[in-house]
Image 1: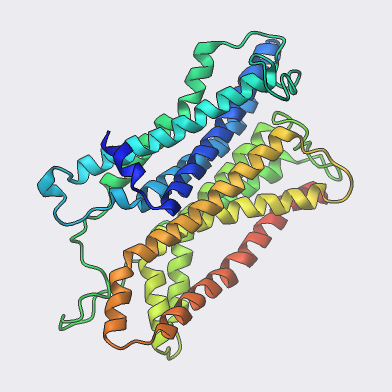
Image 2 (image 1 turned 90 degrees about the vertical axis):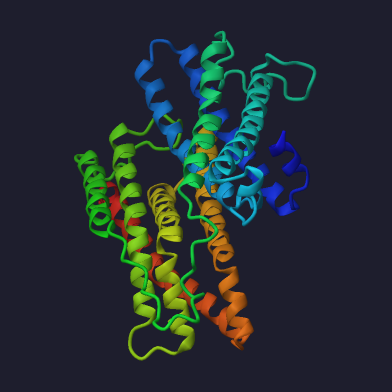
Length: 391
């Protein structure tokens, strides 16, 4: 009940983010139901059904990551002084975040179920009744228990991940890096993230798996897009390793960008921008690495299928839109969380006489150096992924 009351008094932009979480949950739920419909209508193609289900876990993970990012930026779940006195400590706030996330994702799952049944022709009286009956396996009955189990995956995973993420979040009394202006010594810089070597190794392993899978197929690209089950499972495994590797390497690369900004006699703006990047490396580096992996996959697919008419299929297109949209929205939401975390720091700097233009210049400088580092990295990985399939 408290979660619903807080929802009614929430800022419109926060409601928009929750609606986007519901939309992502609806898209993933629809893909999962399509996989179930295919399995019900093609019992002899069990391997293809399993592969379809494995492909659905990519947008599922992207949607869960987005839901967690939205929960972390929700003002109603942010630790504040005085909340513990009324019984809203870290544990209660994490439960509140889990409930709010579960409400949004469950709403999306229900929309997915209604749309799926409508397009199959099981629900009548609306336009486009049974418009995709053949694609959704309407000739076979839909197992209700299996459908509800699949639809529960996104709400359960998102609520659990949100609760765990908010319980691990630092409390509101944790001092910020730039706020100890009265301290006799400057605060220590943020430690370097330790995942960069492992991230590079996993990225190289993923590219090697994709190259090994494509042996003997020179000149003929693997049949990715027509249906979700038309891509070899090893390609999915290789891309997953690459994505995990880039997610692990992202914080280290972001921290390195901060160090580069402060090199060679930096001014005040470069020092500020570099120090903020170093402090926020873990918060924005991981979603930035995942966006890098997704964009490299998109570029590789465009390289393979850009010359000539190729049908990507509606389900593959929906999955690609979900993954790209959720990962990009997660990155933007993480950037918003970082902005909220340093709000008091920015106010303190302005009170000390720092010009607002300096803060804006530091923001633009951070965005520019991240673009300079990650854009070529994305292109190189895309080219390496597509090279064995085009040579």
